Amino acid sequence: MQKIRIKLNRGVSAVIAVLFMALLGGANLGLFGGGVAFADNLTSRKVTVSSSAKGSISTNAAGQAVPAGEGGNGAKANHTFSFTLPTTGNVGSVKFKYCTTAFGACTAPTGLDASTLATMASSTGWSGSFPLSLDTSTNLTSGDAECVGSGNGRTNCIAVKKGTADSESTGARTVGFGTGGGTDWIKNPTSVGDYYVRIQLYATTAYGTPGDSGNVMFAIVDQVNITTKVQETLNFSVANTPVDPSTSCVALSGGGNIFLGDVTNHVLDFTQAYDNHTYFRLSTNSANGVVVQYSGDTLKSGSESIDVAGTAGPTPEASTVGAEQFGIGIDSADATAFGYSFTNLSASAPYSTGNGTITNGGTASFYFDTASKTAPITVASSANVVICDTGSVRYLANISPNTAAGVYTTTITYIATPTY
Image (cartoon, rainbow, N blue to C red; front, side, top):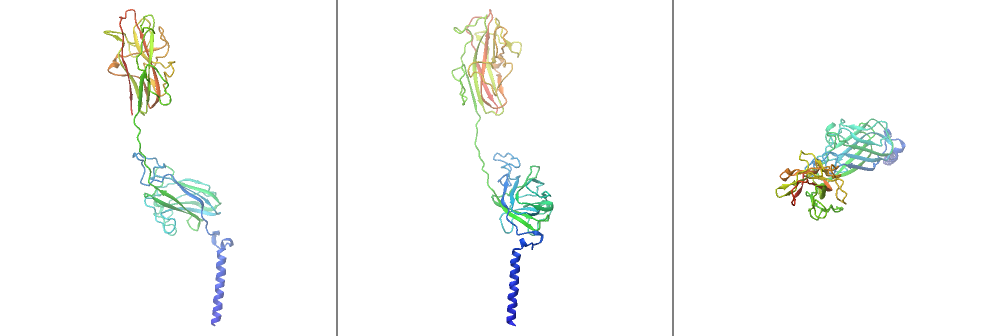
């Protein structure tokens, strides 16, 4: 009897062994229900995050708000998953579970919050008849799910599913979250460290019958805050001769003295109009603009003075040979090399028409205001930065037959005032 029992046990063991071996190959024999085989690892898998900043950070080093979805905002980030399906089979749902480890019991990362997601931001490559959509209602707090929170209060899991499970072929897939609307973002973990997302595909829409799976990893790191300083700059020069500004916007030099009159003796004659030029060069990083102003008086000799152009009001006058006139204007047609180049600056009225002829009733017109002695008056301005502009100021002098003899002089001061 003992021998009989021994033979019987050995026979049963042999049968069990054969059956077990058959089961191991059962994927190809159709022995498992639903046609589900041992699941494979997802390949070429990764998660791309818009920001590696902690979820508590939404401002830059200057305390200014960083727009959602940008690198400096960890409080509102988007996460995009990419992977390749290695096998063909039914897919009904997908779960993305955030954990502090790749395997074992899942501990949710501190501070992570995906509960405010409202929709998927992207979904590409899925070949089934029923598209994926965000699932915020299914309870995933038990069994394999181990998610923190239920329904739309789920914080460390993102679930997507189809209306009906159907077949997916092999190939690349993407699923993205964080669309940019309202609170539809993922809040990153609030502590520096490495974190894992366990991706699990299921053959049903009820997150049952696990299929292909794989882990991806991302890191939350401290940001590099860089601080430097750029000081306010103003390069302003005035001279009687322009020079090539070159690439460095070289300052004008050579002094500001000029003469009005004939070439030899600098004498005015009531039968002819006379002019001359000085130049100013300006560059500034003033973001809110700059004004160039003048301050001075008309030509004077003791108690005698030459009348100014535009005595009837703030209207420029053309040259009138034989009548007293002293005025200035910006000469945009100055043919002197490097003499005029307004790119950022604009001439201000009534000083913007100094280009043209100065014969009697010529096309150029001029103006001067002696009130500028105490209240400087603007001749040119810009609403923003000035890279490098050169201005040509043209001076007109006319006298009448009754103008008293003498040596007439004046000093004109130019002032550049930037607003930072």
